Image (cartoon, rainbow, N blue to C red; front, side, top):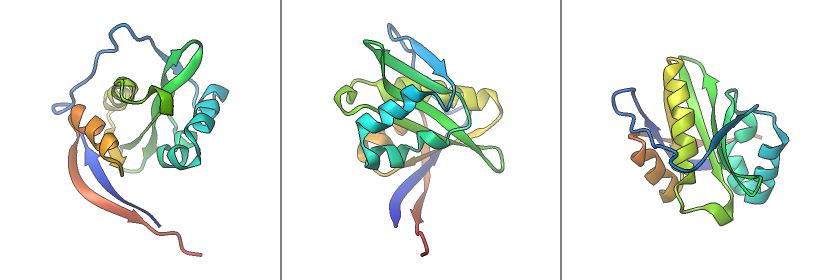
Length: 146
């Protein structure tokens, strides 16, 4: 079983983009090895929850000392939905990097005419979504049948 998780959505009108400020946000292909390195650093649980390995968009990343410490992207789903994925390295959390990379991914999805969806289990993820203007509209529990 996976969840429960809150599902949140944002429209172009409700979106509150975050400026990167002094941070440089770089774009990488979804299959870039630096994303796999970030997933390893974050651990199986957090990497599995973020599912960066399933994104179909480019990845929006922030690097520190040459290493990707935060990344976001989205997977295009049916009905013009963009399922947003965000992951930050454990040592880089709490500094707004998820908001910066998430904002870049959400902005790109909206430009492409997609409806961004944010699935959050943790309070921290819910706070990031709320800061970007997402409205919580449902709950999800996923069950894997053997």
